[in-house]
Image (cartoon, rainbow, N blue to C red; front, side):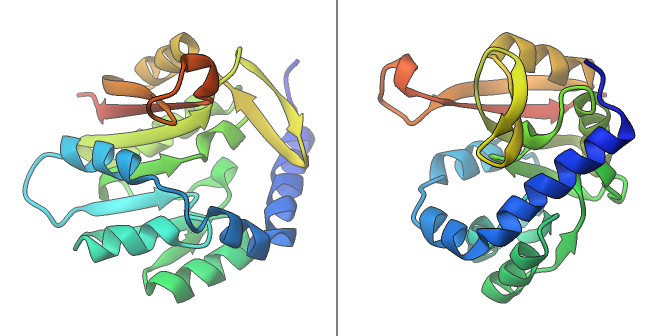
Length: 209
């Protein structure tokens, strides 16, 4: 079923409201999450000498912004939740933009890498090709996009107050390739568990010519 502009506005506003209402508990609950595997996957594929300009898309309270900055890079955060933007600025000292994923305004060719950790699954499937094109345009030539999403059977809908689209590997690969990306690697998380206990699909992509 095609979503009209009113549907999309509702999806965005209610999902952001959920995070706004639960910002403090979300920060506490995710503070100790180890995403070093994901950060390393992005950084090892970026070409050229560091430091790198990195967009932390959906930066939340700023946990990973702090990590990128501590590693000597030049991260910029982006989130649509007002409280997260405040928290991320305070926690990291980094520049943080408040933008809705469905209404991005990104500078062209600005970033060496984009870190989209547990973020892009909030974009409705019909809007994802456009959003991916916008992310591609924000990368420098041969720039790198990292994404990690909860995987599923290509279904989407509401889940505990948030809208999500849950792609399988093949569906996700097709979307990224159509948007002009070349796959570098993918893996499932958490590490070391049977596949049925790995709900997260992580993948790394290079901006194609």
